[in-house]
Length: 116
Image (tube, one colour):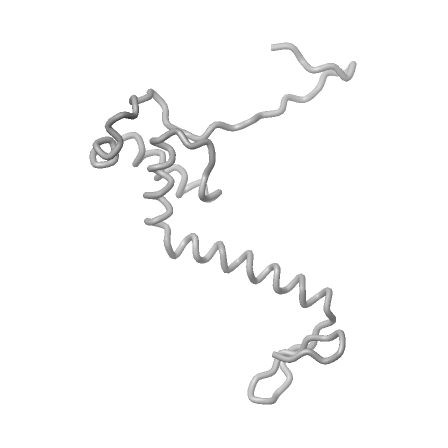
């Protein structure tokens, strides 16, 4: 990889593979980083699930992942894993273990919040 003025050049053994202007190179780098984080999350799924289950069991209000399958598995583990329950003996078992969420309700026609 090389920089030439305001352009980024991607080379392979001296052969030009890709030439991008700076803004496009930045966008490509951002997209590559996003995908790399997602791949890392899947590659370390068991560790993410175990850590998320521990957080759920302890009542932490945030998630380590947005992958629904991993969240579901972590929730199941937080509820039923005997070793996790023993690891946190002071935590009072609850009927439902999960991550709290905020839901916005649509406003009514007058622009006021709908009553519930």
